[in-house]
Length: 383
Image (tube, rainbow, N blue to C red; front, side):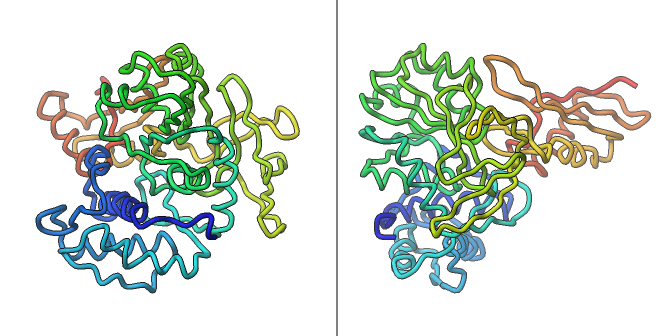
């Protein structure tokens, strides 16, 4: 446990990330990641800072306690508190004991979380840390509150004694100047495509790490052509933990040592030697005893910006609009571009598509769907 200890500044940064997620999930208040990246130990929660109401302050403080399964802890949150104040009060709780952690899946729907034994989270962190060996610093473009974000930007770098810089607020020219020899950049494939389009090149011996959505071969190839030394991709899920990795999308994933393949299931060898069966979110095609390729999601989800969204559910929500008879949503995959959701809409009899209808549908979606769930294109089908 001692090797996995967290600092007060890390707890403060985690508090900010959890606050942003809680505001989105519970109160339907979305804060962009550029703004969230600027929240730190000095950020005040109430007036003069984020300006949250007492109800929201209490919910966000409770979310920090819930993350470490310390729901019985009362941080006595006040409007004058900063994230640093919360960290100072809470840190002794996890220094005393930490047995379970709770993570929300990468979807905007619902509030259920997934419990993981802390020793299994630490087990995943050890193998991810081994992939970071030889790095000098971490530049992170992901939030630390997810299972993958927490492991890759906090636990694993701590094991390698690596400084972590939150680079989410950096403009492309700032990031280009900041990247140096030996750095590790952590980002989702969506953000990697943005970097590919906005940064002309990388210094020698810079490595990339990606997760959260499929990393396409054209993007990985383009990043290598821009000078990126290596591009490693992690596979797993909030529900299962971190399962495997690969160096290029052209190759199959390789299981980490604490996993055993068993056709459509996996067996996790836990730190105490016991075993736990896991059913993956994806269908798996085994290439060898410890290598596999993915063959589509089991639940019909697609990933937009590393967030799981469900086209059928989105279509149903849009279809509840009073002027809409039916709506179906599909995802488009285009080489060299980001995946997009397209909504195909059938209006009720007697209603013609016009600017007023388009604005009404757009407002409907903004009020009921989170940004990753909103279609980029609306097609009004002719009868």
